[in-house]
Amino acid sequence: MRRVTPAPRLRSGRRSPARRPPDRGAPLSEASETPDSAVAGAAGRRPRTRLLLLLALAVLAVDLATKLLVVATVERGEDIRLLGGALYLTHTRNTGAAFSFAEGFTIVFTLIAVAVAVVIVRTARRLRSTGWAVSLGLVLGGALGNLVDRVFREPGFLRGGVVDFVSVFAPDGEVYPVFNVADSAIVCGGVLGVVLALRGIEFDGTRSTGRDAGDDAPARG
Image (cartoon, rainbow, N blue to C red):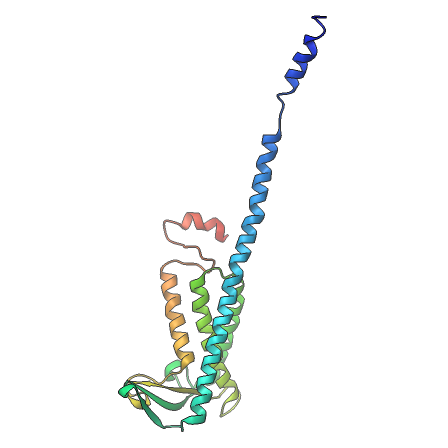
């Protein structure tokens, strides 16, 4: 009786230590983290893209509304003094770039505006940075605002004159070139983009500084 009963206990005791649940648990935990990170990345990307598009539409709407109002109420060449002379409404037409730069190259700047809009829309798919979404949204809205004028206004398709109406400190752009809402948005968005680039902020929200370059490199792939 004593020889028979201990043997099964010893054998069962030797076989029982072979436990594998801890080994199986590690891959499960790692697998569970991967979908969570993917979902978080997708959720983080979508609001930035929406922000870019909404801001661009807002800039476009304000720009078109102010231009229509100026065209309907202010005669071309007329100057309306506001804020004690700090601001003038001056209805002019610009066939060049922003702030009346390089007039006479309307078609060239029209094609550039189209290219800029296409590049920004394609970039919007991978945006995770709120700062870059604001910057590109301002530039896109401004580019589309002036593009509408170049397409639909006189003297013809792709050669239309952009409506400029804001003159500061003096009429007719004597102190500073006459501009519009779209021009302001383009400049503000460009300045913000330069600041973000100097700070090393990428489109995906990571930083490419010397200290964090090693950490960010694998993520950017």
